Length: 262
View 1 (cartoon, rainbow, N blue to C red):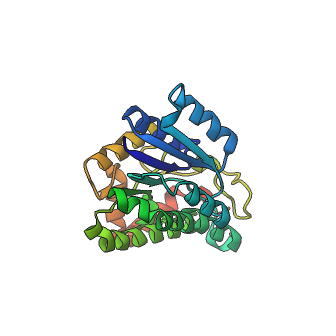
View 2: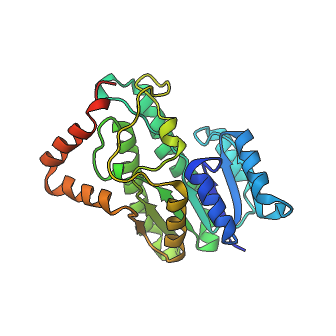
């Protein structure tokens, strides 16, 4: 039985991935900072078969807690690591406090990088795959999301390099680039001062649900794919950004005008 570790597993896309992977016969290690919600979700999956699920409540940006997790998993096989936990913000660059940008970068770049590096021995042993939930915001600018765009762009570049360096060892990297999803990451978005954003988000294209996305991620993993662009509209938008950046910016300012004063 193959083993998968999923971060941010107590809600949203992480929980959808956990359910989908469970249905496909994976053994799961679930990680989330919300201990109560995580324990509830793990219990829902486990039923009488507690051997197929373990869960750990911690903040992955806490170095000590993350090191304790890695130590607890020292003897665990690991066929797949899904770096899903994330955070975003909705606030204009000029108004946003630097601490908000640092928090987003810590969750969306530092934590997945540190966890992956710590678990490389387990991944090498099983010729496993790292799956990173990136974003189309890492490919093109999304107004009001400068920190998030920066973190996801850094994530993509780091793991594209890692892919090339580990290819001869059999460790795979799947980069996933979803567009807007109906998940708690947007409901929990930070505002300019680090408190929850008070204004509604703007979006482009179709807002997909987490279950739809989870199935496509697992299908891409099973197929050995390296990159997943599940939404054709946002792939088109990323090409527009490269081919006609001034037009892209005009359209983006029109679409996100309601957010630019926050």
